[in-house]
Amino acid sequence: MPAVSITRMLADTNAAPLGERRAVAGVVVLGWEDARAYVDAAEEVGCPLILQAGPGARAHMPVNLIGPMMRHLADAASVPVAVHFDHGKALDECIAGLEHGFTSIMYDGSLLPVDENIATSCKIAEAARSANASFEGEVGVVGYTDGAASHGTSVEEVARYDAAVEPDALAISIGNVHLQQEKAATIDRELLTEIEARTTAPLVLHGGSGIANIDRRWLAANSRVAKFNIGTELRMAFGKSLRDGLAAEPDQFDRNRILQATMDPVKATAIDVLRGLWEPSA
Image 1 (cartoon, rainbow, N blue to C red):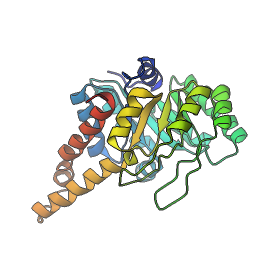
Image 2: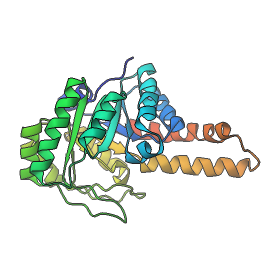
Image 3: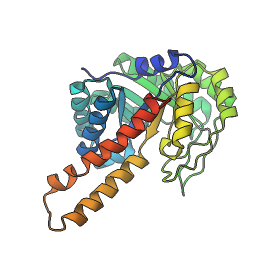
Image 4: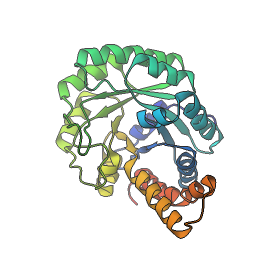
């Protein structure tokens, strides 16, 4: 089916009664093999999927290449798949994403004063909607393991942002951290409840790999968190399978065979992630 935006995908998850809700995974794409494995996993589970290209992926493969590659996979999938431009930092690069097949744009103005974040977000959201794409914004800083610190989302600022921008998805900082290899995040459920009371948009948690599986399932079923960004645990599965494959065949030099050997292990890990969010009672 043709690639979709995230608007209806996430709104539908939030429309279900509390306790019965599901969430969608935004999976970090770094190349053809992992993207193909993610789509295969979503088709096996029978759930929607968001393929995401962040700054690292776009630096490695220009947006005019990675966008159409991901769009090709999304258009051919048997389940709804969105193609998401993650952590855009400027208007021009977000517009480039729209021009190269992305059906969803995330602008990260979280380090800016909230008024500046709102002003630029409104421009990008308007451009996205004109292109029949979705817009995701962010309020609050999600930090990095061994890197920049987090700053929790301000309830007052996120309420202002939501009312002014009306994003299709809204990323927040409530204890989630990027690039955690251990599931060590402590989610502030009280802050989440306060944010839910002051906003209407489906909510997003970046750094989803660092959130314990049981917490992801609970949040998917019982809150308005409709999207979890998942990257680190999938990259770890790729790295392990790559090392295992090279150790098993030390004389192998064919790039395609080496990388193809990672696809089944990455798919298996992705299936576990997707089932945990789409089947939260499992």
